[in-house]
Length: 319
Length: 253
Ligand SMILES: Cc1cc2nc3c(=O)[nH]c(=O)nc-3n(C[C@H](O)[C@H](O)[C@H](O)COP(=O)(O)OP(=O)(O)OC[C@H]3O[C@@H](n4cnc5c(N)ncnc54)[C@H](O)[C@@H]3O)c2cc1C
Ligand SMILES: Nc1ncnc2c1ncn2[C@@H]1O[C@H](COP(=O)(O)O)[C@@H](O)[C@H]1O
Image (cartoon, rainbow over all chains, first blue to last red; front, side, top):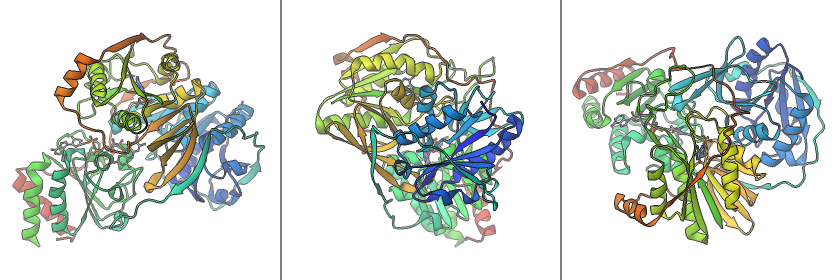
């Protein structure tokens, strides 16, 4: 049993995910109250160089051909073995496509407690989770002996998890990775859209509040008047009201426009994490408690159907 | 193909959420419950698989206000068997639920179990992967396409930015569905009413609800935002006028 904080590094096709650096920054805060070291756990194959800029006291490196790309089975086996042997104080996973396939399974397999959706740690080492679409925070003592934690972005800057000083890399033994029940076949590239929303300066973004496909035209008209393009939240894309190339958020694109104008978007964490680099966020929502108002510069508490057409006309007149 | 879909009811986020008197949990008596939106996708994916390749779809939901509605709606869409799990689920964690569900699900001997990818009120992981490990099945989440291929399924798993990974998964398995291949179908209320007459809900008791493995919550609170939008008020006309002023300031009109 040690007081060390482990971070399961996420990487995809040679690229370290931002959440890994955010977790390194979080681990530093937690290590200060726990009194241990910040230890990055890198699983991969010929991937050592990915660790060069980790702000970690040490990197434990598990190298194996079956770990080259993420598959749940192989990663679970390798991590279960390591956690059982070393018994750190906490292991941080991304609340992501990778981390979510690992943490819950390991909690049962290793009989270790799990806290999910953690956004930050307090000075005295409590976890603070954000749930219910950003409307509720929950705080609790870090469970013992080894806490498994899944983390969402928002509480730390990824720059704080980077260092110019390469950390020491310690190879660790990888257990037998056989009888795997999941195999990666290949990657399918995202469908290219007509525009790259990550590069557009003016985005009119619609959420579930737009109600149906026909109403998208309202947003299109406003976008045309302003010289922008229409994007959407996940429910809008999942209902096929807009193509997937227009998805903003955790599973879609990160955007950084001059103006991000939301119509009926609540501001769930999975949406917000991808829009915080926007210069000016303007939000229209009927719910005064919608989390989007906490990050918008300007807000309008109003039914979008009362406002959008009027606004489009006024913009046209002003041009 | 014996397909099981787990459906969960969650507080509707459009309503006001209330924290209970102890200050460490949501007050479930105030919340209006709706189906977790990803479960709608899981049900849709289950029905699509049945339509393509045959088999049966069983929907399991915990006893909660609105559960019957969720179950009968699924029946109207084409689900074959409806099970309601009885027990006191107010503020029960997912570790406890997974243990309770493990018994019920293994009794059905499914080839494939579908859950929603996650729910917005999780504090101790998601039911799907917890259950998968208890049942010694593989689990994959963030899934947005499934096709059955003998004793395996070929799935598409979502990564950020629209990238997908195609993976082969040995059956029986549990998948966390992010999105069905088609938007969840709409069923008319009349069809749901008809389903109420023609299908029945089986009830099963949840055995021990042991919460161990979860994490204790000391305090729940509404976020104190560090900033808030400058609110623009007035009639739609006035608001539009002021917004045009903002656009002018930003140099876009
Ligand atoms: C693994 C995972 C990945 C995800 N990835 C993404 C992602 O990439 N992008 C994303 O957006 N989401 C993502 N989500 C979903 C996310 O959690 C939220 O469910 C989603 O962002 C909510 O979208 P919304 O704001 O449009 O809808 P809602 O949360 O339903 O909000 C609708 C809002 O519209 C308002 N409204 C309703 N009617 C009107 C009206 N007439 N006028 C004005 N306002 C009105 C309501 O008050 C409400 O605030 C993901 C979720 C998971 C679990
Ligand atoms: N109480 C429950 N009853 C039925 N299904 C559930 C329950 N809790 C979770 N699930 C399933 O697990 C998915 C993920 O929810 P969660 O485990 O809460 O993240 C849900 O979308 C459901 O499919």
